Length: 283
Figure 1: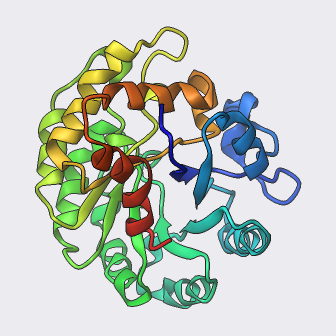
Figure 2 (figure 1 turned 180 degrees about the vertical axis):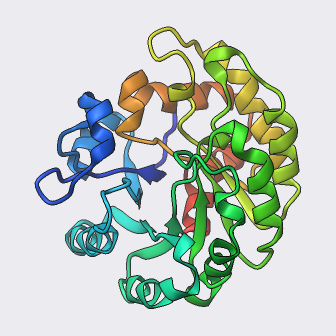
Figure 3 (figure 1 turned 60 degrees about the vertical axis):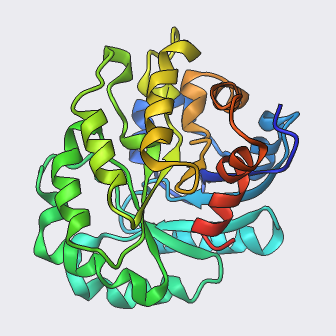
């Protein structure tokens, strides 16, 4: 049992009256409003002390409005400490004025541009995308990497070109768990971990397995490999809620990760479930 307040570094809040989410047509279970109070209720008996909101792929061009909305939530909810907003970095350096506008919002900590849904395998290798990425440190922003495992190769090339940027790998790179795939994901993950400017979220793992039939024993080798590669100073807990609801209750993933790290020290568990997220996102 985790007996201290948790930092959840990957939470999606939705307001379906305010924003359009085209992707929700393919996930009707998620097509509703989701609030921080909903999260707190589903997390019981665990206490969520700090929340990092991660952009929810709102329809273009609502991404700036989403950032302003998150700030309004944070103004009245002390749990909501950080926000990772969307910016279309493929626009190149011309995106900087919008980056600066987001930086004026106190809750902003980072940027994510979804890569997993891009058909162009060289999406992140566009010179404009790289140039925009290199602007992030100017605004003290990190970049959240959200990919499927087959996109790892070019993403590694991208990250190597941006050594001054702090990267956070979401969902352990989305390995093919439901198909029992481990390679080349294991090799690529170790290569990513060799780069000192990258951290990794232990998040979104159950949704990469069979939603109805996954077991904790099936997930364990993937968890162990992440910890072995990144170590306890460069990993952090993420609930990936409410997307995680597709594969079970909020507490299911939390308890799997608690079980998988049962042999770790109290300090290591606090780093994973609380302290590293605070440090990475400057909460």
